[in-house]
Image 1: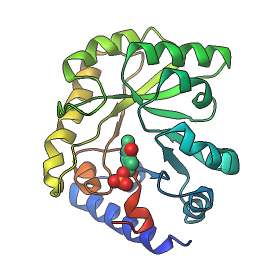
Image 2: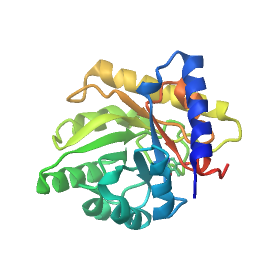
Image 3: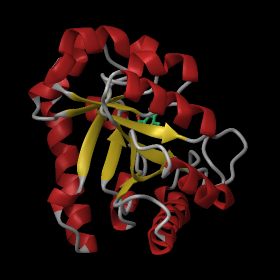
Length: 227
Ligand SMILES: *Cc1c(COP(=O)(O)O)cnc(C)c1O
């Protein structure tokens, strides 16, 4: 397995999108989503100079985590059940899918027990699509107030998934909506510290996400040439 060519192509496209939108490359982090590959595949992605790995289920992540451990920075990007929190806190530095009070409380309790902290993104269902997890935009501000009372959970930004579409332009209003919600959240100063980050953009729409202010891209299939 050698992903150097696909990773290099993605890097070129990220840089081109940065130039088009007047953004600095160093303000954007790339998470390699490894749910389609095994531990050797994840290791091959690290060989390409990537550092952040993303997984959306603990069951699928476990082998890879045991093989790679601290050689990567781990991001939990999928729906997180509260009964899986015990496996995730302490291993995954970032949770991208914080979307409900029960999960907030479970993260706080586990982090207290391990005397650690977790970085989290509040997941927002900007599009209102039925099947997606995430807070509805009108719930975001009350939830942010609640999160501010949980000192072990550091809210660093917002995350969204755009509905699947052939045309990446379809994702633009969703990404723009997330950016505007972040600006409003910070203007209202509901969190303990400003939320600076936007986790948005997947293989089909990451360039549009960059143009709309993404700071963390979550890319899977395109990195392994599956597009
Ligand atoms: C699978 C997944 C990705 C990556 O998707 P690709 O289209 O393969 O790039 C990003 N974010 C989440 C939450 C995912 O589950």
